[in-house]
Image 1 (cartoon, rainbow, N blue to C red):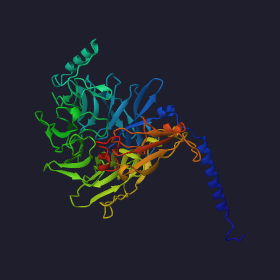
Image 2: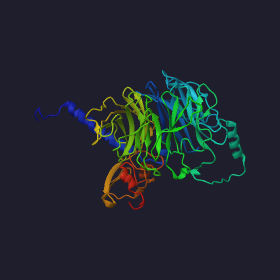
Image 3: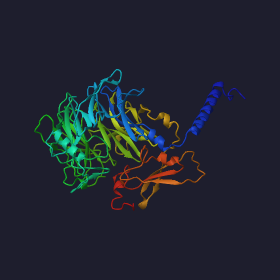
Image 4: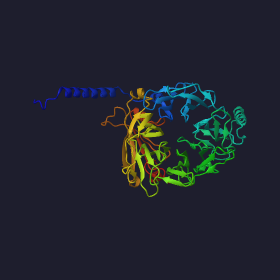
Length: 550
C-alpha cells in the first residue's frame, strides 16, 4: 500500500471511535422500552411562563401527578434565561400556579389555595439568588381569585372571580352568604330556564365571572363590571389572556359577549374601560360580526391588537390579526392574504412595529415575526423563525431573544430560548409569494423529563398525503410501535380528532398520546380530514353541511 492510500493513525482512531459510537447508540436503543401509562403520569407538566424584566430569569410552573393519591400539584421554578439549573421556589402542599414577575422585577405574584380557596399571593424576588421571600396574601375574596395580572405601573393586580351579579358591587359578604346557603341546602336539584346552563363538566349556575382590581398595597377589590349578567371574560377552553392593561395602567381592554343567548352566539366583542374614572362605562371598539379575542396594547400605547373572526355564528372562522388605532379608531387587518389562523401573538416591547405570532400549518405550530407597518397593496415583511414541533407562550426577553414553549410528538412541553440576532426584514423577507424560513439558534432551557424519556422507545411522527373526495389532498401521520419490523403486519389504531376543526400534528398529549397508543404493538394512524385546521380556511369550511361525507 502506498503512503498516499495508507490510512493514518488518526483516521483509524476516528473510525474506531465512530464505530464505537454507533454500537453504543444501538445498544442504548435496545435498552429503551415501550412507554407505559404510568410513565405518562410520571411526567412533569410544564405550565405557563414569565420572564423577568431584565431578561435574566424565567419563572414557570410545573405540575406533578400522584396516581396513588389521585392529585395534581403545581409548583413554581426559576431557571436562568442564559441556561442553567432549575430550582423550585415554592413548596406549599396546596401548590402554586400562574407566577408573574412584577414590572420592576422585585416581586412575584402567584395563585395558591394554601389558605383554603384560591387567592393571590405576593413575594419578594431576589434577582441575584433567583429566590423568593416569604409570601403575603393579597386577596381574601370568598369567591376566590384567578387569572391574576400585574398593572404596568406595579400598583395594582387585575384578576377574575365568579360572583352573584345581583349582590351589591364589592359586597363579598353577600356572595359568601349565597354560597354558604347553597352548600348547606338539602335541595341539590337545579332548575334552568335558559341556555347555556353547562360547560363540559360544570354547571354555570347563577354566578358570573367579573374582573376585579385590587391595590398591591392592600384593600378591598373593586368590581369592574358591577351588576353585569354576562361572563367577563366569556367561557374559554384556554389560550391567551382575554384582558390586558394599557401601558400607562389607566385603561384595560377585555372580551365580552352581550348577545341575549350566548349558547348560540360566537359574537365576542372587545371593550375598553378607563380605570382612572370611577364613573366610566365600557366602550366597544371591535366591529366584526364574529368573535374577537386576546386584546393586547402595543408597547407605545398607540394601538390595540386582537384576533378577529369576520363571520357571525361560526366559531371556526379564520382568526385574523387586526390592529386598532386608538387615536383614529380605525381597524386594520394585518396579512389579509394569510390563509392560516393566528393562534397567539405578542408585541415586541423593544420594537413596537413588530409582532410575534404562532400559526398552525400542516401539523406544525410555528413562530413568525411580522413587521406591522405595511399597508394594503404593499408586501408584508414576514419571516418564519422556527421549525418542527408546536411552539407557544412567547415572551420577548430583550437582547434579540424570545422565550417560548415547544413540544413534539416525542417530547412533552419544554422551555426554549430563541436567538433572533440573525433575523432581518430586508427585501428578501417579504410575503407574498413565499414566507422565508430563517432558522434561529434555539436552546432548550428546561429538561423536565429527560431521565424518563431517555428510557423510552418513542418513534418519530411520519407524515403522508393522499387524494380524498374531489381530488383534495389530505394529510395524515403515522407513529410506529417500538422495534417496528417492516416485514411484519401490525394492527392499527386509527385516531379521530374532535372539533371537527382541530388537527393532529407534531405535539404531545396527555389525553390522546399516539406514542402510548403505539407502545402496545400498534401502528397509529392520524388523519386530518376536511374540517381540520392548518390547511387553509377553504379546507376547514369544506366539512360544513357534509360532516361524515367530505
